[in-house]
Image 1 (tube, one colour):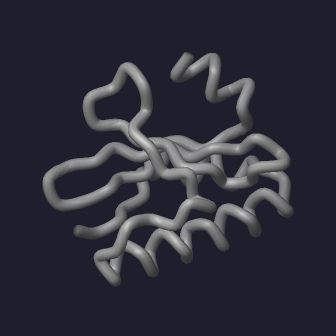
Image 2 (cartoon, one colour):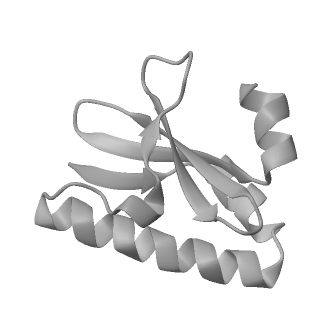
Length: 94
């Protein structure tokens, strides 16, 4: 399994406040470490299947600020496609 990032994700990521980008980087590092080790993802990531979607998963970026990231799981990768705050998340994935 590998992790990939869609170009639209980077556009959204770059628009985030700096402190959220730093938290996102920290969470991404944890995700990559767990993925490489082949272990269950840490509880702090709150990585779970996105309700109503077959292959979409969400992860918490910043618990206190309500930011989330969304990826699509394929047979051989997780492709990160979206990141944003809880209001934008509700509008997009409602």
